[in-house]
Image (tube, rainbow over all chains, first blue to last red; front, side, top):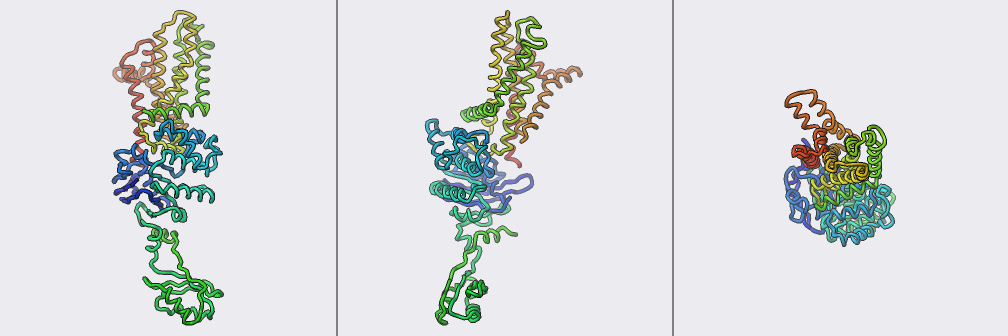
Length: 309
Length: 241
Protein backbone atom coordinates (compact mmCIF):
# COMPACT_ATOMS: atom_id res chain seq x y z
CA UNK A 1 0.00 0.00 0.00
CA UNK A 2 1.36 3.35 -1.01
CA UNK A 3 1.90 6.26 1.31
CA UNK A 4 2.16 9.67 -0.27
CA UNK A 5 3.16 12.64 1.84
CA UNK A 6 2.52 15.87 -0.02
CA UNK A 7 3.92 19.18 1.22
CA UNK A 8 3.16 18.21 4.80
CA UNK A 9 3.65 21.05 7.28
CA UNK A 10 2.86 21.00 10.97
CA UNK A 11 3.02 24.12 13.08
CA UNK A 12 2.77 24.05 16.87
CA UNK A 13 1.99 27.53 18.07
CA UNK A 14 4.75 29.57 16.49
CA UNK A 15 7.14 26.68 15.97
CA UNK A 16 7.32 24.77 12.72
CA UNK A 17 7.79 21.15 13.72
CA UNK A 18 7.74 19.87 10.18
CA UNK A 19 8.30 22.13 7.23
CA UNK A 20 6.85 21.23 3.87
CA UNK A 21 8.12 17.67 3.47
CA UNK A 22 7.14 15.34 0.66
CA UNK A 23 7.97 11.69 0.07
CA UNK A 24 6.43 8.51 -1.25
CA UNK A 25 6.58 4.96 -0.04
CA UNK A 26 6.00 1.91 -2.19
CA UNK A 27 4.34 -1.27 -0.95
CA UNK A 28 6.72 -3.69 0.70
CA UNK A 29 9.25 -1.03 1.54
CA UNK A 30 10.77 -0.79 5.01
CA UNK A 31 11.70 2.79 5.55
CA UNK A 32 13.78 4.06 8.43
CA UNK A 33 13.02 7.48 9.74
CA UNK A 34 16.16 8.88 11.21
CA UNK A 35 16.87 12.13 12.93
CA UNK A 36 17.97 13.74 16.17
CA UNK A 37 15.45 14.35 18.93
CA UNK A 38 12.87 16.94 18.01
CA UNK A 39 13.54 16.62 14.30
CA UNK A 40 9.91 15.96 13.43
CA UNK A 41 9.88 12.15 13.15
CA UNK A 42 7.13 11.61 15.67
CA UNK A 43 5.14 14.57 14.37
CA UNK A 44 5.14 13.09 10.89
CA UNK A 45 4.09 9.69 12.22
CA UNK A 46 1.29 11.20 14.26
CA UNK A 47 -0.01 12.88 11.15
CA UNK A 48 0.12 9.69 9.07
CA UNK A 49 -1.82 7.88 11.80
CA UNK A 50 -4.45 10.65 11.93
CA UNK A 51 -3.71 11.53 15.53
CA UNK A 52 -2.98 15.12 14.59
CA UNK A 53 -4.10 16.83 11.43
CA UNK A 54 -1.57 18.49 9.10
CA UNK A 55 -1.45 22.28 9.29
CA UNK A 56 -1.12 22.24 5.54
CA UNK A 57 -0.46 19.67 2.86
CA UNK A 58 -1.94 16.21 2.80
CA UNK A 59 -1.07 12.59 3.40
CA UNK A 60 -2.56 9.75 1.38
CA UNK A 61 -2.50 6.17 2.60
CA UNK A 62 -3.58 3.73 -0.09
CA UNK A 63 -5.17 6.66 -1.89
CA UNK A 64 -7.22 7.77 1.14
CA UNK A 65 -6.58 11.21 2.56
CA UNK A 66 -6.00 11.61 6.30
CA UNK A 67 -8.10 14.74 6.08
CA UNK A 68 -11.13 13.32 4.32
CA UNK A 69 -11.14 9.65 5.32
CA UNK A 70 -9.38 9.37 8.68
CA UNK A 71 -11.42 6.33 9.75
CA UNK A 72 -10.52 4.46 6.58
CA UNK A 73 -6.85 5.38 6.91
CA UNK A 74 -6.80 4.33 10.56
CA UNK A 75 -8.21 0.93 9.67
CA UNK A 76 -5.43 0.39 7.13
CA UNK A 77 -2.55 0.93 9.47
CA UNK A 78 -1.10 -0.38 12.66
CA UNK A 79 0.63 2.05 14.96
CA UNK A 80 3.03 1.64 17.83
CA UNK A 81 3.38 5.05 19.51
CA UNK A 82 6.69 6.23 20.88
CA UNK A 83 6.18 5.55 24.59
CA UNK A 84 4.08 2.44 23.90
CA UNK A 85 1.17 3.44 26.14
CA UNK A 86 -0.98 0.52 27.30
CA UNK A 87 -3.91 -0.05 29.62
CA UNK A 88 -1.93 -1.47 32.51
CA UNK A 89 -4.97 -2.77 34.37
CA UNK A 90 -6.02 -5.09 31.55
CA UNK A 91 -4.56 -8.50 30.93
CA UNK A 92 -2.87 -9.29 27.63
CA UNK A 93 -5.68 -11.33 26.09
CA UNK A 94 -8.39 -8.90 27.14
CA UNK A 95 -6.45 -5.99 25.76
CA UNK A 96 -5.74 -7.61 22.41
CA UNK A 97 -9.40 -8.59 22.14
CA UNK A 98 -10.43 -5.02 22.82
CA UNK A 99 -8.14 -3.67 20.11
CA UNK A 100 -9.29 -6.40 17.73
CA UNK A 101 -12.90 -5.41 18.31
CA UNK A 102 -12.08 -1.76 17.71
CA UNK A 103 -10.41 -2.81 14.48
CA UNK A 104 -13.63 -4.43 13.32
CA UNK A 105 -12.35 -7.97 13.28
CA UNK A 106 -15.40 -10.21 12.89
CA UNK A 107 -16.46 -11.98 16.05
CA UNK A 108 -15.78 -15.48 14.73
CA UNK A 109 -12.18 -14.61 13.83
CA UNK A 110 -11.47 -12.70 17.04
CA UNK A 111 -10.15 -15.62 19.08
CA UNK A 112 -7.94 -17.10 16.40
CA UNK A 113 -6.50 -13.71 15.52
CA UNK A 114 -5.64 -12.89 19.14
CA UNK A 115 -4.14 -16.36 19.61
CA UNK A 116 -2.10 -15.91 16.44
CA UNK A 117 -0.68 -12.55 17.58
CA UNK A 118 0.18 -14.01 20.98
CA UNK A 119 2.09 -16.77 19.26
CA UNK A 120 3.86 -14.51 16.76
CA UNK A 121 4.93 -12.06 19.44
CA UNK A 122 5.97 -14.73 21.93
CA UNK A 123 3.48 -13.80 24.62
CA UNK A 124 2.20 -17.31 25.33
CA UNK A 125 3.50 -17.42 28.91
CA UNK A 126 2.33 -13.93 29.77
CA UNK A 127 -1.08 -13.90 28.18
CA UNK A 128 -3.05 -14.05 31.43
CA UNK A 129 -0.93 -11.47 33.21
CA UNK A 130 -1.94 -7.88 33.66
CA UNK A 131 0.00 -5.62 31.35
CA UNK A 132 1.15 -3.63 34.37
CA UNK A 133 3.05 -6.68 35.63
CA UNK A 134 4.99 -7.20 32.42
CA UNK A 135 8.58 -6.21 31.87
CA UNK A 136 9.38 -3.54 29.32
CA UNK A 137 10.32 -6.05 26.65
CA UNK A 138 7.05 -7.91 26.95
CA UNK A 139 5.09 -4.67 26.95
CA UNK A 140 6.81 -3.77 23.72
CA UNK A 141 5.65 -7.08 22.28
CA UNK A 142 2.12 -6.35 23.41
CA UNK A 143 2.43 -2.98 21.70
CA UNK A 144 3.54 -4.65 18.49
CA UNK A 145 0.82 -7.28 18.79
CA UNK A 146 -1.90 -4.66 19.09
CA UNK A 147 -0.48 -2.76 16.12
CA UNK A 148 -0.56 -5.84 13.92
CA UNK A 149 -3.73 -7.49 15.18
CA UNK A 150 -5.83 -6.58 12.16
CA UNK A 151 -3.09 -7.53 9.72
CA UNK A 152 -2.66 -3.96 8.48
CA UNK A 153 -1.04 -3.15 5.15
CA UNK A 154 0.97 -0.38 6.73
CA UNK A 155 2.90 -0.44 9.99
CA UNK A 156 4.05 2.73 11.69
CA UNK A 157 6.50 1.99 14.48
CA UNK A 158 7.87 4.83 16.55
CA UNK A 159 11.12 3.61 18.11
CA UNK A 160 10.03 -0.02 18.34
CA UNK A 161 13.10 -1.40 20.07
CA UNK A 162 13.69 1.08 22.88
CA UNK A 163 14.11 -0.61 26.23
CA UNK A 164 14.64 -4.08 24.85
CA UNK A 165 17.60 -6.32 25.60
CA UNK A 166 19.91 -7.24 22.69
CA UNK A 167 18.22 -10.60 22.08
CA UNK A 168 14.81 -9.03 22.00
CA UNK A 169 16.04 -6.29 19.70
CA UNK A 170 17.25 -8.88 17.23
CA UNK A 171 13.96 -10.79 17.49
CA UNK A 172 11.90 -7.66 16.91
CA UNK A 173 14.08 -6.67 13.98
CA UNK A 174 13.65 -10.09 12.44
CA UNK A 175 9.92 -9.80 12.95
CA UNK A 176 9.82 -6.39 11.29
CA UNK A 177 11.90 -7.65 8.37
CA UNK A 178 9.60 -10.62 7.93
CA UNK A 179 6.54 -8.41 8.01
CA UNK A 180 8.12 -5.88 5.71
CA UNK A 181 8.07 -8.35 2.83
CA UNK A 182 4.38 -7.82 2.27
CA UNK A 183 3.70 -4.63 4.17
CA UNK A 184 4.83 -1.06 4.06
CA UNK A 185 6.73 -0.32 7.24
CA UNK A 186 7.91 3.01 8.57
CA UNK A 187 10.03 2.86 11.67
CA UNK A 188 11.73 5.68 13.42
CA UNK A 189 14.84 5.38 15.42
CA UNK A 190 17.87 7.22 16.50
CA UNK A 191 19.81 3.99 16.70
CA UNK A 192 21.64 4.09 13.41
CA UNK A 193 22.67 0.45 13.37
CA UNK A 194 19.07 -0.55 13.68
CA UNK A 195 17.99 1.41 10.66
CA UNK A 196 20.97 0.09 8.73
CA UNK A 197 20.07 -3.47 9.69
CA UNK A 198 16.36 -3.43 8.99
CA UNK A 199 15.51 -0.80 6.44
CA UNK A 200 15.57 -0.82 2.65
CA UNK A 201 15.50 2.92 2.54
CA UNK A 202 16.52 5.67 4.90
CA UNK A 203 14.98 9.08 5.33
CA UNK A 204 17.00 11.47 7.41
CA UNK A 205 15.04 14.33 8.81
CA UNK A 206 16.44 17.30 10.66
CA UNK A 207 14.67 20.39 11.98
CA UNK A 208 11.52 19.48 10.13
CA UNK A 209 13.18 19.04 6.74
CA UNK A 210 14.24 15.88 4.91
CA UNK A 211 17.99 16.15 4.47
CA UNK A 212 18.63 12.76 2.89
CA UNK A 213 16.59 10.06 1.20
CA UNK A 214 17.94 6.87 -0.25
CA UNK A 215 19.28 3.40 0.38
CA UNK A 216 22.17 2.97 2.76
CA UNK A 217 24.55 2.49 -0.16
CA UNK A 218 23.38 5.64 -1.88
CA UNK A 219 23.70 7.67 1.26
CA UNK A 220 27.15 6.42 2.12
CA UNK A 221 28.31 7.09 -1.42
CA UNK A 222 26.95 10.58 -1.16
CA UNK A 223 28.54 11.29 2.19
CA UNK A 224 32.08 10.44 1.08
CA UNK A 225 32.98 10.40 -2.55
CA UNK A 226 36.63 9.74 -1.75
CA UNK A 227 37.87 6.19 -1.55
CA UNK A 228 39.55 5.17 1.70
CA UNK A 229 41.55 1.96 1.90
CA UNK A 230 43.28 0.14 4.67
CA UNK A 231 46.49 -1.22 3.24
CA UNK A 232 48.80 -3.70 4.91
CA UNK A 233 52.16 -4.43 3.30
CA UNK A 234 54.80 -7.03 4.05
CA UNK A 235 58.29 -7.77 2.88
CA UNK A 236 59.55 -4.19 2.93
CA UNK A 237 61.00 -1.55 5.17
CA UNK A 238 58.54 0.80 6.81
CA UNK A 239 59.93 4.08 5.54
CA UNK A 240 60.28 2.82 2.01
CA UNK A 241 56.66 1.60 1.88
CA UNK A 242 55.34 4.78 3.46
CA UNK A 243 57.19 7.09 1.08
CA UNK A 244 56.28 5.12 -2.00
CA UNK A 245 52.62 4.89 -1.06
CA UNK A 246 52.54 8.59 -0.43
CA UNK A 247 54.05 9.43 -3.77
CA UNK A 248 51.54 7.40 -5.78
CA UNK A 249 49.77 9.81 -8.18
CA UNK A 250 46.25 8.77 -7.12
CA UNK A 251 46.84 9.07 -3.36
CA UNK A 252 45.83 12.21 -1.56
CA UNK A 253 46.79 11.32 1.98
CA UNK A 254 48.43 8.45 3.84
CA UNK A 255 48.05 7.78 7.53
CA UNK A 256 49.88 5.23 9.58
CA UNK A 257 47.61 2.88 11.44
CA UNK A 258 50.24 0.54 12.80
CA UNK A 259 53.99 1.05 12.36
CA UNK A 260 54.86 -2.45 13.60
CA UNK A 261 52.49 -4.31 11.27
CA UNK A 262 52.99 -1.86 8.40
CA UNK A 263 49.34 -0.88 8.10
CA UNK A 264 48.30 2.35 6.47
CA UNK A 265 45.12 4.19 5.74
CA UNK A 266 45.15 5.61 2.23
CA UNK A 267 42.74 8.24 1.02
CA UNK A 268 42.52 8.56 -2.75
CA UNK A 269 42.09 11.78 -4.66
CA UNK A 270 38.57 12.73 -5.54
CA UNK A 271 37.05 10.37 -8.10
CA UNK A 272 40.11 8.15 -8.35
CA UNK A 273 40.90 4.67 -7.14
CA UNK A 274 44.25 3.60 -5.71
CA UNK A 275 43.61 -0.12 -5.63
CA UNK A 276 45.43 -0.98 -8.85
CA UNK A 277 48.37 1.41 -8.32
CA UNK A 278 48.94 -0.04 -4.84
CA UNK A 279 48.86 -3.57 -6.17
CA UNK A 280 51.22 -2.68 -9.00
CA UNK A 281 53.54 -0.94 -6.55
CA UNK A 282 53.78 -4.11 -4.49
CA UNK A 283 54.44 -6.26 -7.55
CA UNK A 284 57.18 -3.91 -8.74
CA UNK A 285 58.98 -3.95 -5.38
CA UNK A 286 58.34 -7.65 -4.66
CA UNK A 287 56.30 -6.82 -1.58
CA UNK A 288 53.19 -8.63 -0.60
CA UNK A 289 49.82 -7.35 0.53
CA UNK A 290 48.63 -8.38 3.97
CA UNK A 291 45.41 -6.51 3.56
CA UNK A 292 43.61 -4.21 1.16
CA UNK A 293 40.12 -3.30 2.28
CA UNK A 294 37.89 -0.36 1.59
CA UNK A 295 36.86 1.53 4.74
CA UNK A 296 33.09 1.79 4.79
CA UNK A 297 31.54 5.05 5.83
CA UNK A 298 29.29 4.38 8.74
CA UNK A 299 25.78 5.64 8.91
CA UNK A 300 26.91 7.56 11.97
CA UNK A 301 29.18 9.68 9.82
CA UNK A 302 26.52 10.36 7.24
CA UNK A 303 24.09 11.20 9.98
CA UNK A 304 26.47 13.55 11.71
CA UNK A 305 27.46 15.23 8.46
CA UNK A 306 23.90 15.86 7.50
CA UNK A 307 22.41 16.86 10.83
CA UNK A 308 25.22 18.90 12.33
CA UNK A 309 25.11 22.59 11.66
CA UNK B 1 -22.52 2.77 16.76
CA UNK B 2 -20.56 -0.41 17.38
CA UNK B 3 -17.32 1.29 18.51
CA UNK B 4 -19.31 3.26 21.09
CA UNK B 5 -20.51 0.03 22.64
CA UNK B 6 -17.03 -1.57 22.54
CA UNK B 7 -15.54 1.43 24.34
CA UNK B 8 -18.39 1.62 26.85
CA UNK B 9 -18.02 -2.08 27.59
CA UNK B 10 -14.32 -1.77 28.28
CA UNK B 11 -14.78 1.23 30.55
CA UNK B 12 -17.52 -0.49 32.46
CA UNK B 13 -15.39 -3.59 32.86
CA UNK B 14 -12.54 -1.43 34.06
CA UNK B 15 -14.85 0.09 36.71
CA UNK B 16 -15.57 -3.39 38.00
CA UNK B 17 -12.02 -4.72 37.65
CA UNK B 18 -10.60 -1.83 39.61
CA UNK B 19 -13.23 -2.34 42.35
CA UNK B 20 -14.36 1.28 41.94
CA UNK B 21 -17.74 0.01 40.76
CA UNK B 22 -18.21 -2.28 43.76
CA UNK B 23 -17.15 0.38 46.22
CA UNK B 24 -19.44 2.91 44.61
CA UNK B 25 -22.42 0.56 44.43
CA UNK B 26 -22.06 -0.63 48.01
CA UNK B 27 -21.49 2.88 49.30
CA UNK B 28 -24.44 4.24 47.38
CA UNK B 29 -26.87 1.54 48.44
CA UNK B 30 -25.55 1.60 52.01
CA UNK B 31 -25.60 5.34 52.32
CA UNK B 32 -29.04 5.90 50.86
CA UNK B 33 -30.38 2.87 52.75
CA UNK B 34 -29.03 4.15 56.03
CA UNK B 35 -30.68 7.53 55.72
CA UNK B 36 -33.85 6.24 54.11
CA UNK B 37 -34.59 3.55 56.68
CA UNK B 38 -32.54 3.96 59.81
CA UNK B 39 -31.35 7.43 60.64
CA UNK B 40 -32.59 11.04 60.76
CA UNK B 41 -35.85 11.94 59.10
CA UNK B 42 -36.25 8.44 57.73
CA UNK B 43 -39.41 6.91 56.38
CA UNK B 44 -40.62 5.76 59.79
CA UNK B 45 -40.01 9.19 61.25
CA UNK B 46 -42.05 10.86 58.52
CA UNK B 47 -44.63 8.10 58.66
CA UNK B 48 -45.43 8.21 54.97
CA UNK B 49 -45.06 5.50 52.36
CA UNK B 50 -42.99 7.64 50.05
CA UNK B 51 -39.46 7.54 48.66
CA UNK B 52 -39.04 11.32 48.97
CA UNK B 53 -36.28 10.88 51.56
CA UNK B 54 -34.43 8.46 49.32
CA UNK B 55 -34.51 10.85 46.38
CA UNK B 56 -33.28 13.68 48.57
CA UNK B 57 -30.35 11.61 49.84
CA UNK B 58 -29.50 10.22 46.39
CA UNK B 59 -29.55 13.72 45.00
CA UNK B 60 -26.62 14.56 47.26
CA UNK B 61 -24.87 11.21 47.21
CA UNK B 62 -24.70 11.12 43.43
CA UNK B 63 -23.46 14.69 43.40
CA UNK B 64 -20.30 13.52 45.21
CA UNK B 65 -19.99 10.06 43.68
CA UNK B 66 -20.21 10.99 40.03
CA UNK B 67 -17.06 13.17 39.93
CA UNK B 68 -15.19 10.26 41.51
CA UNK B 69 -16.36 8.00 38.70
CA UNK B 70 -15.77 10.36 35.80
CA UNK B 71 -12.41 11.77 36.90
CA UNK B 72 -10.51 8.75 35.54
CA UNK B 73 -12.23 8.49 32.16
CA UNK B 74 -10.01 10.73 30.05
CA UNK B 75 -7.51 12.18 32.53
CA UNK B 76 -5.87 8.77 32.92
CA UNK B 77 -5.71 8.25 29.15
CA UNK B 78 -4.13 11.68 28.83
CA UNK B 79 -1.60 10.90 31.53
CA UNK B 80 -0.53 7.46 30.27
CA UNK B 81 -0.83 8.44 26.61
CA UNK B 82 -3.27 5.66 25.72
CA UNK B 83 -5.49 8.36 24.23
CA UNK B 84 -3.13 8.34 21.26
CA UNK B 85 -3.63 4.61 20.88
CA UNK B 86 -7.39 4.92 21.13
CA UNK B 87 -7.74 7.81 18.70
CA UNK B 88 -5.56 6.14 16.09
CA UNK B 89 -7.96 3.21 15.96
CA UNK B 90 -10.78 3.46 13.42
CA UNK B 91 -13.10 5.36 15.75
CA UNK B 92 -14.19 8.98 15.73
CA UNK B 93 -13.60 11.38 18.60
CA UNK B 94 -17.33 11.52 19.14
CA UNK B 95 -17.59 7.74 19.50
CA UNK B 96 -14.88 7.80 22.17
CA UNK B 97 -16.69 10.56 24.05
CA UNK B 98 -20.09 8.89 23.91
CA UNK B 99 -18.67 5.46 24.74
CA UNK B 100 -16.98 6.76 27.86
CA UNK B 101 -20.08 8.71 28.77
CA UNK B 102 -22.37 5.71 28.44
CA UNK B 103 -20.13 3.49 30.57
CA UNK B 104 -20.63 5.72 33.60
CA UNK B 105 -24.30 6.25 32.88
CA UNK B 106 -24.81 2.49 32.80
CA UNK B 107 -23.07 2.18 36.16
CA UNK B 108 -25.43 4.79 37.63
CA UNK B 109 -28.41 2.93 36.17
CA UNK B 110 -27.13 -0.22 37.90
CA UNK B 111 -26.79 1.71 41.17
CA UNK B 112 -30.32 3.05 40.89
CA UNK B 113 -31.64 -0.38 39.93
CA UNK B 114 -30.15 -1.81 43.11
CA UNK B 115 -32.44 0.44 45.15
CA UNK B 116 -35.60 -1.01 43.61
CA UNK B 117 -36.03 -3.22 46.74
CA UNK B 118 -36.65 0.03 48.64
CA UNK B 119 -39.56 0.71 46.33
CA UNK B 120 -40.93 -2.79 46.76
CA UNK B 121 -40.65 -2.50 50.54
CA UNK B 122 -42.37 0.88 50.61
CA UNK B 123 -45.16 -0.45 48.38
CA UNK B 124 -45.83 -3.09 51.02
CA UNK B 125 -45.88 -0.49 53.79
CA UNK B 126 -48.67 1.65 52.44
CA UNK B 127 -50.16 3.52 49.52
CA UNK B 128 -47.34 4.73 47.30
CA UNK B 129 -47.67 7.34 44.58
CA UNK B 130 -46.19 5.16 41.84
CA UNK B 131 -46.01 8.04 39.41
CA UNK B 132 -43.94 10.14 41.80
CA UNK B 133 -41.48 7.26 42.34
CA UNK B 134 -41.09 6.82 38.61
CA UNK B 135 -40.45 10.51 37.99
CA UNK B 136 -38.17 10.63 41.03
CA UNK B 137 -35.96 7.97 39.50
CA UNK B 138 -36.19 9.74 36.17
CA UNK B 139 -35.05 12.96 37.81
CA UNK B 140 -32.08 11.25 39.43
CA UNK B 141 -31.14 9.73 36.10
CA UNK B 142 -31.31 13.07 34.29
CA UNK B 143 -29.30 14.76 37.00
CA UNK B 144 -26.66 12.01 36.89
CA UNK B 145 -26.56 12.22 33.11
CA UNK B 146 -25.85 15.94 33.34
CA UNK B 147 -23.12 15.55 35.96
CA UNK B 148 -21.44 12.70 34.08
CA UNK B 149 -21.28 14.95 31.06
CA UNK B 150 -19.70 17.73 33.10
CA UNK B 151 -17.34 15.24 34.75
CA UNK B 152 -16.25 13.83 31.42
CA UNK B 153 -15.49 17.31 30.17
CA UNK B 154 -13.46 18.10 33.29
CA UNK B 155 -11.58 14.83 32.84
CA UNK B 156 -10.73 15.70 29.26
CA UNK B 157 -9.01 18.97 30.02
CA UNK B 158 -6.45 17.61 32.48
CA UNK B 159 -4.19 14.64 32.99
CA UNK B 160 -4.63 14.68 36.74
CA UNK B 161 -7.57 12.77 38.19
CA UNK B 162 -7.77 14.88 41.32
CA UNK B 163 -7.94 18.07 39.29
CA UNK B 164 -10.71 16.54 37.20
CA UNK B 165 -12.57 15.58 40.37
CA UNK B 166 -12.31 19.08 41.83
CA UNK B 167 -13.29 20.83 38.61
CA UNK B 168 -16.37 18.66 38.35
CA UNK B 169 -17.34 19.41 41.94
CA UNK B 170 -16.69 23.07 41.36
CA UNK B 171 -18.90 23.26 38.27
CA UNK B 172 -21.38 20.98 40.03
CA UNK B 173 -21.62 23.19 43.09
CA UNK B 174 -22.60 26.09 40.88
CA UNK B 175 -25.57 24.20 39.46
CA UNK B 176 -26.29 22.39 42.69
CA UNK B 177 -26.21 25.20 45.25
CA UNK B 178 -24.77 28.52 44.17
CA UNK B 179 -27.21 29.32 41.39
CA UNK B 180 -30.04 28.59 43.79
CA UNK B 181 -28.58 30.89 46.43
CA UNK B 182 -27.95 33.67 43.92
CA UNK B 183 -31.47 33.46 42.54
CA UNK B 184 -32.83 34.02 46.01
CA UNK B 185 -30.63 37.00 46.74
CA UNK B 186 -31.27 38.88 43.51
CA UNK B 187 -34.56 39.84 41.96
CA UNK B 188 -36.12 40.28 38.55
CA UNK B 189 -34.92 38.54 35.43
CA UNK B 190 -31.55 37.57 36.87
CA UNK B 191 -33.31 35.77 39.69
CA UNK B 192 -35.31 33.87 37.11
CA UNK B 193 -32.19 33.12 35.12
CA UNK B 194 -30.30 31.66 38.10
CA UNK B 195 -33.40 29.85 39.19
CA UNK B 196 -33.55 28.25 35.75
CA UNK B 197 -29.84 27.37 35.93
CA UNK B 198 -30.25 25.59 39.26
CA UNK B 199 -30.45 21.82 39.00
CA UNK B 200 -32.52 21.86 42.19
CA UNK B 201 -35.37 23.68 40.44
CA UNK B 202 -35.62 21.12 37.70
CA UNK B 203 -35.00 18.11 39.88
CA UNK B 204 -37.68 19.15 42.38
CA UNK B 205 -40.14 19.81 39.63
CA UNK B 206 -39.55 16.38 38.06
CA UNK B 207 -39.44 14.58 41.42
CA UNK B 208 -42.83 16.09 42.26
CA UNK B 209 -44.19 14.39 39.18
CA UNK B 210 -44.31 17.37 36.87
CA UNK B 211 -42.18 16.81 33.81
CA UNK B 212 -42.08 19.99 31.81
CA UNK B 213 -40.34 20.49 28.45
CA UNK B 214 -38.36 23.25 30.16
CA UNK B 215 -36.81 20.68 32.50
CA UNK B 216 -36.02 18.29 29.70
CA UNK B 217 -34.47 21.05 27.59
CA UNK B 218 -32.37 22.08 30.59
CA UNK B 219 -30.90 18.64 31.20
CA UNK B 220 -30.52 17.89 27.51
CA UNK B 221 -28.56 21.12 27.04
CA UNK B 222 -26.23 20.36 29.96
CA UNK B 223 -25.56 16.86 28.66
CA UNK B 224 -25.06 18.06 25.12
CA UNK B 225 -22.78 20.94 26.12
CA UNK B 226 -20.60 18.61 28.18
CA UNK B 227 -20.26 16.09 25.38
CA UNK B 228 -19.64 18.69 22.69
CA UNK B 229 -17.10 20.38 24.95
CA UNK B 230 -15.29 17.10 25.51
CA UNK B 231 -15.20 16.37 21.82
CA UNK B 232 -13.87 19.86 21.17
CA UNK B 233 -11.06 19.28 23.69
CA UNK B 234 -10.12 16.02 21.97
CA UNK B 235 -10.16 17.68 18.56
CA UNK B 236 -8.11 20.58 19.85
CA UNK B 237 -4.96 18.42 19.60
CA UNK B 238 -5.09 19.19 15.88
CA UNK B 239 -4.59 22.88 16.47
CA UNK B 240 -1.73 23.01 18.91
CA UNK B 241 0.42 21.02 21.33
